[in-house]
Length: 161
Image (cartoon, rainbow, N blue to C red):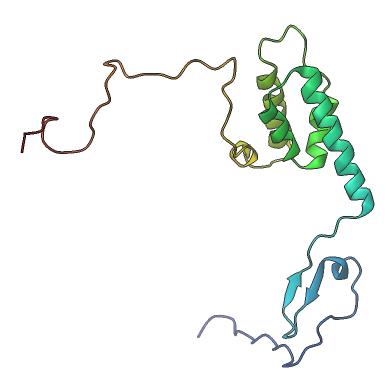
């Protein structure tokens, strides 16, 4: 009726070959299954990739040690993309008169990731239970010192049976 006619897409052959002819870099990352459906090949790091990762891990460990950072900041940096870590490391050491070097480095991480339009990924970086920071305040207690019963029921008193 007044709209454009829809043309059906051609169907894939019933028994498509498992792998098509190479198409540049696409063949490096993609293949086809026995039914002709595309799938992504697993990443296989080269020796150069592995060497870069080892070097970067060493640089991160040195950076954490030299700046007196907490282990969790090192874990955050290890979970970043390598190019982003390079940018954070290239900003240099934290000034010695800094009262909280951990916060300085985490701010650098956030700034680099924001500039690269990455999601705020601080939650995904460090899933371990955090060790108490010497800069964090002690845990807060309720003002009454007692736990409050937020459940319903009986006013907090129990009757003897």
